[in-house]
Image (cartoon, rainbow, N blue to C red; front, side, top):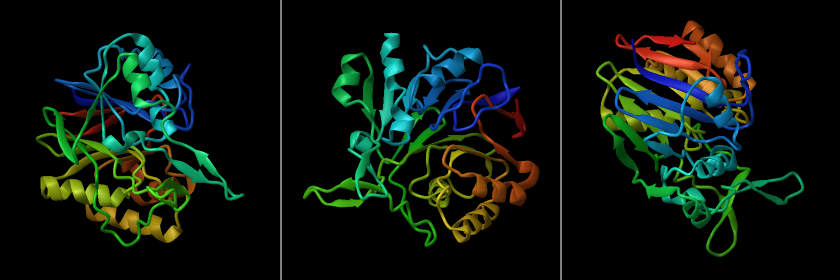
Length: 288
């Protein structure tokens, strides 16, 4: 019997299941005995399509949680707004910050949330801005403003914002948020994009919760454009934390995913669109 079920509704790649689609983005449905939470919405209504194919009803989710304010995690909000329900949306208050990516010609491409807060609220979405760590449901925690402590997780220099003086500066990603579930057997962690560093995030969660097992980690790791040395240091740190199952998604990159597969063997999987992960009462991870 599953204690927690994680259903990947959006990822860059799709599982070999009839009707399941992929796009550049991320979304996962988290179901526990007490709560049903949608984490991110991809960049379109694809997450909703995949949910219908998989027989998952999103109209009654208890909350929608946003990992950060990029279009490929927030673009599906308009699909939620069309439902007519008053969805509660939990996010860090920086989620609507204008964000850009540096192009090869030096120009800036807007990659922030496609919609402003007032537009979404006028269509029924209700925003609740969470603190750096907040229990959003019994045993389910939102965590952001993660301290940068590792020397090898430097962030992506192409991702920028404009400061109060209009200068282009690195995006601080204060809003880079993750969710973790605290169970009797250990922690289940869902990452959005890990802009503050995957290892930094996991270290921070363990600092908050103590030396407890990490049963499963899924989500984006933002290792797609990093050096092989950073990937190696990341894998070393994950081994040190004794992560029992690792499912990567979205912004991990093929090279980093292959390295992780070699390093973790049967404990590794790709958390693609359509993949369902069940964590049972013994802490076992079962893939569907």
